[in-house]
Image 1 (cartoon, rainbow, N blue to C red):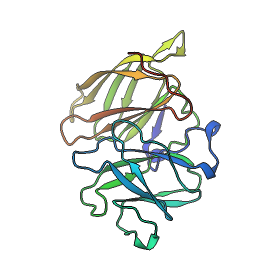
Image 2 (cartoon, one colour; image 1 turned 90 degrees about the vertical axis):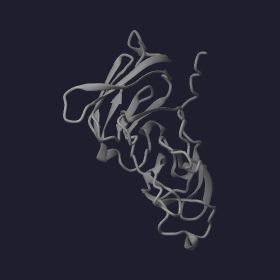
Image 3 (tube, rainbow, N blue to C red; image 1 turned 60 degrees about the vertical axis):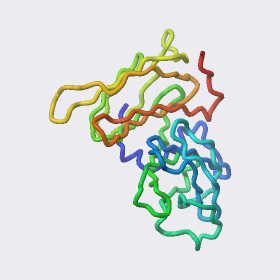
Image 4 (tube, rainbow, N blue to C red; image 1 turned 180 degrees about the vertical axis):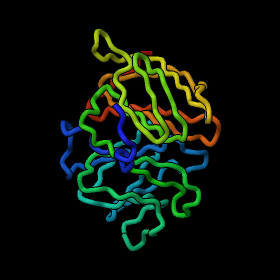
Length: 239
């Protein structure tokens, strides 16, 4: 099932009404999937009242961070600040609606920002049919990308997204384990597809998964795959 990217652009929030949280326990996670060398690994997240130091995780999802309820504006700063008057209006920021109670902040590099060299993108994931065991793939590149993910196939045009079912199953039931993932991209101006990468990934049937395809500045886009197991304990990888 494909979902217009415009619906997603804003902040990764509630995965479904079955695990919606009370606004008093609003949480978020942070992800910096293409963090360049020299970019900060931590910054301070200001919620309009106070700030807290947060990880700009690149290889995994950050811990959960608690935030106040209601409509707020989040900003990333290079130092702790508690006085809103001391916060620069030029700091990287994103608006959070009141009904976003559990979400991700997607961070990307912005060396031109003098307050903190990053920018925030909002990707809304309030999708009731995004179930445990599924993967939401988001193509942020300018290339059409196709993939073979175990038992599933993926086809994404530029700036689009798709939910993909379990890559591994036993008699129709999703199972945890390793699966082969291979990706190709369409050469500009041609019908032909060329390979990007082929990898073996661990899949957890008890988790939701996130996949990102991002322009690298070179010929090939970069591929990222993450597990989010906030709804249950993760299934450990078999060594």
